[in-house]
Image (cartoon, rainbow, N blue to C red; front, side, top):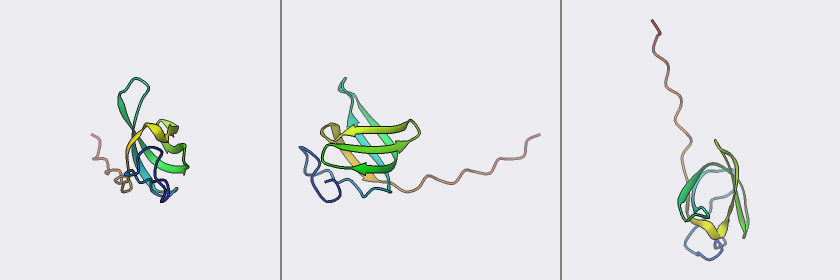
Length: 83
């Protein structure tokens, strides 16, 4: 579902509301699966847009196989004193 509506072709996948941190698993044209992890910028019936470390990714909803909200990234660990 995209904001409560089914993702094209798969009624079981629910996309969180924009502004949330998400992971979206989708199929590449080669058939391999990959993940987009970052802030969900927008979602409609045809495209989900995620802003992650690889930049902005526009994902066709027909390629999505799973999606969920995820917690914020962990805080960086303090560096130990350098000698």
